[in-house]
Length: 288
Length: 262
Image (cartoon, rainbow over all chains, first blue to last red; front, side):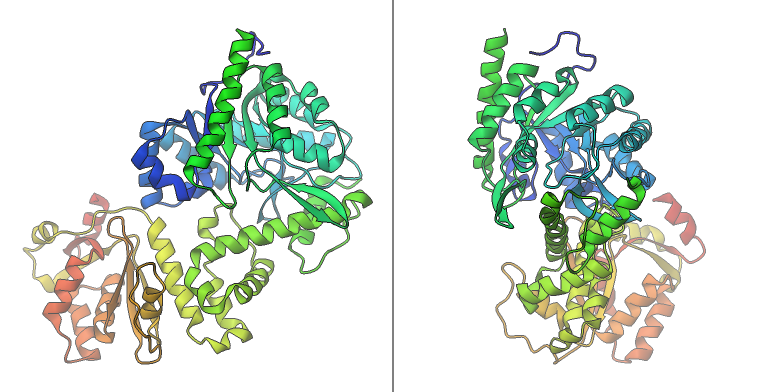
């Protein structure tokens, strides 16, 4: 249930949105499909000018926008790249996104950017580092951000803090909100062998300000099954069920459907978003 | 327990390593899955390079491109999360690969693609129009100094790489290319929305280079004429001024003032 005393009520409407992907941009500008909001990766718009900015401007005129960053590297022990935060700040000034988010992960070590969302051992040391980094980003941006739970494939020898607890503590210490990726919970749960419903129960619902949904792939390594978060297929039934449970627990939340590899026609993505809207509608009817 | 800084250093090295490395900080059961991160980084960066260098990729084929990209990523991984900036060194890297020797113009094609990519994302600026030029004119035209459009890049090759590039564009001409027939002197610029690849002859290109260096028009034309006394000055000037290479012109000496004005 949505907590009435949530300190930071979501400011996007609790409806479905889609991730903005290059093959769909012109079609969205031309046909303006009825979709609640759009989410863009700000790193794709960090060129100085040219058609990408013209297009994002046109889209911003019509839609609420959320910025989902992939390059802040909130988990880097070497701290935050101040130049990157400045680029993000300038872009946020220009496009006024309703939300800004990134991940509980890292991608920069020794100044090298690895272009993947790498996992952290969840320790006190890591918690202090991520808190300091989130504080630095929020103060440079002059606004709160949301932090998303990642998909996990590997387990560290020493990682004593359960992820929902880590996120909860991060949110309490820094004031950041949480972006709950239900598909990531499911992928991590299947890969690491925990119950995704227990994870949901441990998440502080009043801190969840956005939900992500996506498809994943089933693969095999070393004779064992592993689920890969490739955003390359429809949301699977098990993840829809987990989503329904998350809504029942937390109340309706703005929900994004992401699709990044083998990007389908826009209509397919919009149909996934309609499905999410039906879940949201049911949730509203049940909780009213 | 290892401090996070050291762990991330080792983790990053293992991600970029050419072959799987031991990851003692992982549980033995999950160690085989570390490969997923090696693979993610490689595939995503390869596709980022493939997006910038599609013609180079078509010329060498997917397998060779993947091989070259893998080596490049290991040796020169990105230093910024803005992947629009990644790949500047890839053309030189291709030139240095012994296996690229079969396609001697590969690096030059890649340099042209990089210029097109940069021009696409470069800052916007209004190109100089006839009216702007007329306003700058009371001085002798030979004294005019031009401000280059921020998207402009020059590419020169002993091979006809512009033709190769054109026939690999969607809807490009289906002509046969004789790559070694002529050199290419190219200006890549995006005056408005579309990136243009403009071909010049050797002497015309000398003039463009001089103007881009900030030399006054008269001096630039002299340089062109010494390169080729047959330089068709009027046609060249008409081309230069309608192609959107420049954003402003001012008599030498006041050029600085004019720059700060726009």
